[in-house]
Length: 81
Image 1 (cartoon, rainbow, N blue to C red):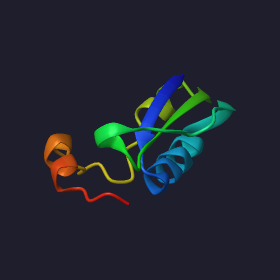
Image 2 (cartoon, rainbow, N blue to C red):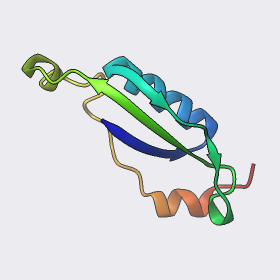
Image 3 (cartoon, one colour):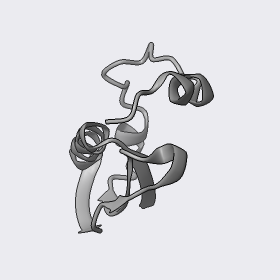
Image 4 (cartoon, rainbow, N blue to C red):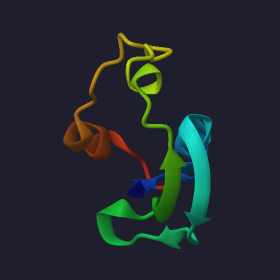
């Protein structure tokens, strides 16, 4: 699995830990700072090996009741670091 992640340092730390719990990190790129309206956020590339067994695919998430956030609204309220 390959993923490009974007977020603050804390967000990237959290999601990297969560994804590492699902599999094995094969490659982790450098964090690249973003500019413009995304100043204070970073881009990160991850390549992982994840389990594809039926048990792993059907395991309930730790927080199955999560909600999506409105990124446009969140960015409008964000203050520069």
